[in-house]
Every structure is written in structure tokens, then in C-alpha cells.
Length: 288
Image 1 (cartoon, rainbow, N blue to C red):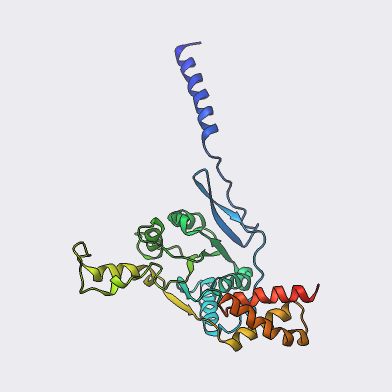
Image 2 (tube, helix red, strand yellow):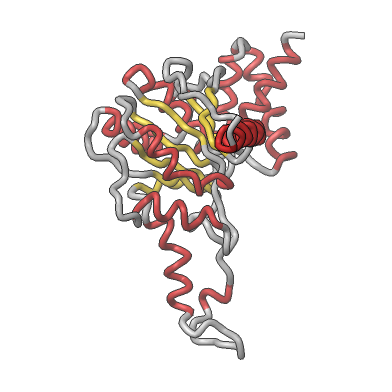
């Protein structure tokens, strides 16, 4: 065996060992396997994991958020039909249907090609890779960022800004970003932000620019939709809807009202989520 043959044999052996150390490559997604996906990371590589059991919530299940539902449904319909549509930021009180509304839109429009990709905020730096992965597909993809908020200095903040409106490349025509948050501006707001005329020894030289930076991300969403806490009667209407959904009769529903109010009082919230949780508990006990 010549020295060249020995070198090639050793090089081939070395490459085989290196391949064993590399993380496995993930196959191309089977786009027929699901209507919803999660972006996952393994061995430093991102891939789309199909969601095999998607929430079955429907638009009709969401009560007392008519204006918000109308805005999101219309925007999503425009997007699915290939018409101009906006990225969406849904903000406001917890448990009022922000995330559920996005899931309900998937169920409403999945037959027309709508698909959902859920991305955790820790993986927002991969947004460009996700967009490249789906850009050539005929389906319409909503990238869903749930319960989004940032602390100052987090990397995903700038990645999202660029993905929304800031890259040299245009956003893909078949991708929109829908995000939910309890914070209107996605970043913590402090009293010092409003004290532009007061400076300590190490204060911000241009506090107005700091405030602009904090609202610049939310402004890149074309559509803002706000959600508010429910009144007592609205909360009880939602309880009635879910109790009926779980098979309770009219007498059981009427008898449940005092318990539903106590349940909300214990949790300090009259929200759709609290109503749904109470209905599951009450209906389960009634059927025991």
C-alpha cells in the first residue's frame, strides 16, 4: 500500500468517526402528517415536530370577544386567500382567549391550507431558518409565539424585530407571525421611562430614545388586538356554554351558578379559562 493509499484510508476512518459525533440530520417534514407543528432543537439543529393532537376549539366556542374574533378571523381569511394581511399582536388580560383564538382559526381554515408553527421565544433566533424552510410551500403558515415577553438584552427580541420588518429580504408571502402577550409593548416598562427630565449621574443620555426602542417591536405588528377581563354576567354565560358542551342539563347549569362565582373568586379572575376549568370540574363531579 502506497503512502497515498495509507493517507486516504486514515482520512476515511477519521471522517467516519467524526460523522458519529455529529448530531443526526432530521428528514424533511411530512407536510401531510399534521396541520400544526412545533419548532424543536436537538443536538443544536432545529426541526419541525408535527402536533398529532391539535386543540379542537372552534370560533363558536369563544364567547364575548366578538370584536376581537372578527378582526383576527378577517385578517386570517385575507391571508389564507392570498390577499394582503398583517402580522398580529394579541395583548391583554390572562385567560381571555388570545391563544385559543389562534388555535380556533387553524381549525377554521386548515382545510383551505392554513398551517400553524409554534415557536418558543428561546428559539426566535431561528425564525429566518423556519421561514426559509416553508417559503416554497403552497400552504399558508402562521408562526405562533405564545405568551411572549422579553427582558432587556434577550437575543430573541432583535431576531423578531428583523423577522417582522427589518431584514434586507422581504417577508415570505406565505408566512405571518401571530404573537400573544400580557404586555402591550413586550418589554418591561418602568417609572424611569417617564422621567425624561430627571437624570442621575449614570442616567440615559437620551431617555426618549429608550422609550422608542421599547415600543418599536410592538409597532412592527400591523394589527393590535386587545383583550379585557369579563364582567360577571359574561363570565357566567361562558360557564353556561362549557357546561352545556360537557353535557349538563338546564337544571344543573342553573344550580352551578353560585359555585361558578365562588370558583372565580378563589382564583381572583373571571376569565374564559377559569370558566372552562370550572365547567370541567363541575361536569365531571355531576357525572360521577
